[in-house]
Amino acid sequence: MKAVFRRTLTMLLLLLVSSFAVFAAIRLSGGDVTAARLPASASAADRALFRQQVGLDKPIINQYFTYLRKLATGDLGNSLTNNAKLSTLATEKIRNSLILGGSSMVVIFALGIPLGMLAAMRRNSWLDTGITSISVAGMAIPNFWLALISIYVFSTLLGWLPSAGQGGIRYLILPTLVLSAEGIALTVRMTRSAMLENLGQDFVRTLRAAGVSERRIHFKHVLRSSLMPLISLAGLRIGQIAGYALVVETIFGWAGVGQALVNAVLRRDYPVVQLFSLLLVVLVTFGNLMATVGYTVANPRLRK
Amino acid sequence: MTRALLGVEKLSVGVHVSGLSYDIVRDVSFDLYQNEILAVVGESGCGKSLTALSMLSLQSSPPLRVTSGVVMFGGKDLLTLPRAELRMVRGKEISMIFQDPMSALDPMFTVGTLLTTAVRAHQNVNKARAEEISLAALADAGIEDPRRRFGEYAFQLSGGISQRVMIALALVNNPKVIIADEPTTALDVTVQAQILERLLVLKKERGMSIILITHNLGVVASVADRVAVMYSGEIVETGSVAEVFRGAQHPYSHGLLRAVPRLGSAAQSLTAIPGRVPQPTEISAGCVFAPRCERVKPMCHEMRPALEIRRSSAVRCHNPID
Image (cartoon, rainbow over all chains, first blue to last red; front, top):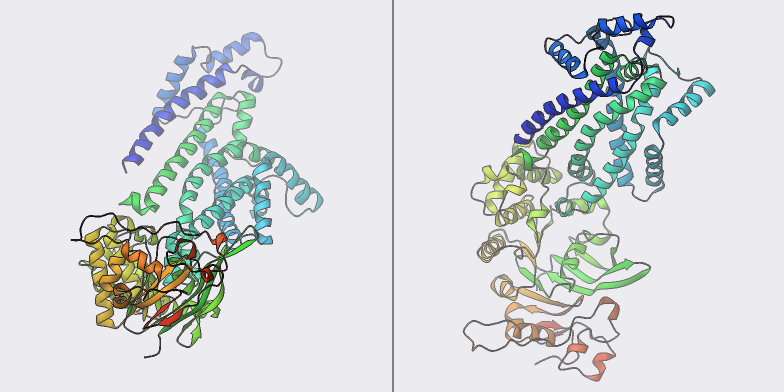
C-alpha cells in the first residue's frame, strides 16, 4: 500500500514536470500558428495582432503560469485553429480513443493468453511452432506497415472491411487488430514461457501426486502463477497503446486523441497539443500505477 | 507370509540425453506389506528418489523414463495404467510427501484451497464437506490450529508446519500407501523427530504402509520395520532392520553402517568406504560395488550378482559377509 501511495505522489510530480516540458517544447519547436488560422494573405501586422490576442507574445514562463492558473479553475482553453472549447472537443475524441484502445486491451489478452497457453501445452508441436513464429513476426513488424498492408488486403483487394472512418463494429476491426498486434505477440510469448517455467515447479509435482487432473493443474494452478508477469505487461501496454494510437488513428482516420494530437502538432495548435500530450502522460503513468496496484492485489505475498 | 500390498519388480529407469541412454535405476525389486514402514536408504544420487517418483510416473519425462519393470498394486501394473486411471491411484491409493515442503506447495493458493482441491479430485463432496475433511486431515497431521492454517499461504508457514501440511495433503484421501521422499531432510532435528513420530502414529492407528526414502541411518533404525539399501541405482541388500543392522551381509551396507558415529564409543576416526560412486556411464558388466569392495573376488568384475535370499535377507553379492 505504501508503494501505491508513493507511486501516486511521483505520478503527480511527473505530470507537473511533463506539462511544462510539453508547453515549452511545442513553443520552441518553431513553426507558426497563424499559418493555420489566418489566410495566407494576412499581413505581418495582422499576424502580430493575433499572437498578442492569444497571449503568444509574452515570455514562455509567463504563458505557462497563466495556463496553470486557468487549468486550476477547470478552463482548458480554446483551440487556436477553430476557437472550439477544448472541453467539448476533448470529450468526443477521448470517447473514440477509449473505444479503440479499450477493445485493443481486451483483444490483446483475450487472444494472447489462450494462444500462449496452447503453445505451452502443445510444446514443440507444429501448433507451438506456428504460434511462436507468428508472434515473432507480430513483434517485428512496425504497426504503420501492418496498417497499410491490412488496408490493402482487407479493404482494397478483398473488400471485406472499410479502410477508414467511424461507424459500426466493422470500422473497429482493422484498427484494433493493428493496434493490438505487438501486444498479442508479447502476451503469447510471456504466457508461453511463464507456463513452461511454472510447469517445472515442485508444486506441480505435488498436485500431480495428489491426483489433481492435468486440466485443473494447467488452468488453475500453473495459469495463476503465470499471470503475474502479465499484470505488469498490461500496465505498460496502456501506455504503449496510447503511443501507437498516434499512428494507427491517423492512418485509419479514427477521430480520437491520437489523430487530433498529430493534426494539432502540424498546425501548431498549442492548447490542443498540451491537453492531449498531457492526457498521454496521464495514461502512461496511470498504466504503471495500475501495474503496481494489480501486482500487489494479485500476489498473496505482497497483499499480506 | 501375507501377500504384498505393493510390488516393484525389476524396475529400471533410464535417462536419455543427446542420443545416449543410461539406466540410472537398475533392476529394483521390493515388496511393501500392509502396516509396515519400509526404508529405502542410500547416499545422494543412488536413485532412491527416482525409484519412488517412477512408481507413480512422476519423474520428469523427458528425459527420464522407465525402461523396464512393473509396479503391481491392486492387481494392476501402475506403469502401464492409462492416465485417467493412474490419476485415481495418485493421492487416493498411494500418495507422496516430498523433500522440500516450502517449494512443494503452490504459493498462490491457501493451504485450504490446496487441500479441498485434493479432496475434490477424488471425492464427490460439496465445498463444506471438503473443508471438514481437510481440517480433519490437518489435525491428523499434527497441526494444532487447523482452522488458522487452513486460511494461510505456504510462505506464511514454517518448514515444520509446511511439512505437516504436506502430510495432511497426502492423508486427505485416506490412502493405503504413503511414499515419503526424504520428508525430514530439510527440517531441524526436533521437528524431524515430530514428523517421524507422526508417520509412526499413522502406521499404528491407520494400518498404513509407508515407504520412507532417506539417507539417514538413524531415521531408519528408529522407525522402519524393513530396509532396502541402494547403491548406484541398485538394491544391494534388503531385510528386516534388526537383521541388517545387527549383521549386514553386503560389504556396502556393512561399510555404510560402520561409517555412522556412535555416541559413547571411544573417539576415533570414522571408517570410510574408499573410492567413489561410479557414474552411470561407467557401469561395467560386473558388480557395481566391485571397484570399492574390500572382499572383491575375480568373478565380481565379470558377472553381476543377482539379489539372492540369504538367511531372511536378500543380498546382491558374490562374497557376502557371514
